[in-house]
Image 1 (cartoon, rainbow, N blue to C red):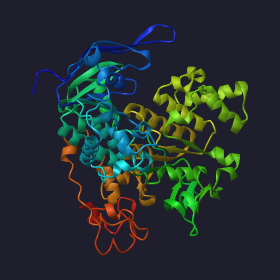
Image 2 (cartoon, rainbow, N blue to C red):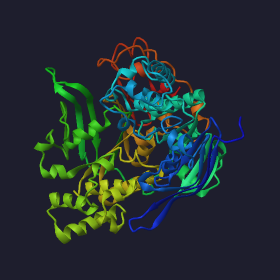
Image 3 (cartoon, one colour):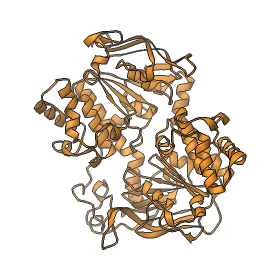
Image 4 (cartoon, rainbow, N blue to C red):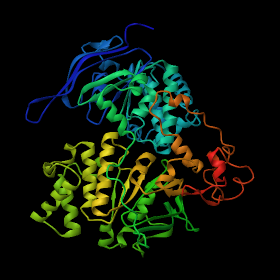
Length: 599
């Protein structure tokens, strides 16, 4: 191996100009080197400078920022001219995989035309050769039907498939350096594992050098040869991955590792003894599209789902993307009318649609959406956003409205000065607190939290979870908490419901998910959560091909049958599974008994 690093950064600085004209250094004296064919991970909280540093390797600085120091990638450098400049390498020798693949693809063009476009633009291959390489990459990235998947449009594919296709686009020109910017943050755990395995396999085949940006040390451990820890634009620690994870030298690194396993400081309040649940979802079925003659929607999602939330209780709903989690929240909020079943509040049936509910019904059930950036109007101040809710539900204006807004800022631990700031001036964690404060402004009884921590780094996620727990104890709030992260749900919730393709396959107290037995699908979810060690992905047992993988799903059998590794011939493929009670307190839909599931 060459002694000369492929990527070499020395004394990198990035400086921006404040509104008052003064200068602010957001990246300060960062240095590192990456040998050819290896992967360096940049790790840290939001705002630590990870993406800024990664983009600088392409000679790019956002918003007029000024780059200083030296950067060399192969024969190109920051101060190079013509073909020797970093900017000239973009999209060819240096490529970039963004966090949101769905936003990166053009919805009006077929996938194959977008994947091969860089090769045609940079003339690394003609159309025939580029298509052949694309199919080879699709196959290497474990995409289904690699010969034909490129003929589809982006909306016809899942998030995990789009993320792998974006990686194929980045690799189509046979680049020397690939930058991955939080490529698995928005994916559920099972998809994340598949994507990580595909990324690592193709990286080794292509012998490409990589920069992997993330806030998740457990994910980074599976991809990186080296780890560089950043905080406030400065290097806190860097080392090879295995020794850094085994024995971190810096206190900040140890704090990041601890944040990966959330523990609620406030603890959970005692369960309500009230006989009637606050919110009850009873036998709900729902979906999208026209309703057929049989009363079923064209695209059914939920099937006979029941969930009860007591006063002051917290129930978590977990599952992969497409399991129906967010659809449950939409039905409860009145945004989607169920085709069967009902939702009750304090024992009283709620109107299925939003327009038929009273203002008080709307006030008592509030929803907090996943993406605060799209949920909050960036042109309005925090005071305006919260004040509008206060006027609508409580009629307060002027001094009284401002007093209530200040109280909400205090409740959500936001600075008082935030009242006059626009949302686009806030950090990701602060935006999510405003998102939560908007729900609290109505003075609700129950809040529907739809993936509210999934896009946040581990440290901010922990702070939001502590805030939710504290508000629950202080205000007596109840939560329906939707997530694909079982560790987060266990930390906050009393009970957990597991959904698979709209069917409730397991439900039980949060403590019952600490140890087996579980439903086979729950076992898959828990087993897909990366461990914080460099060899976890390599040591993870190969998934057994399910005995009924060839079978299509059918409503008359277990929905998980085609993916179940422990399905029983002559039973699982002929009859619906029974509801069983396990000794840990949970109930599962499965033909296997407890002893068989422990083995």
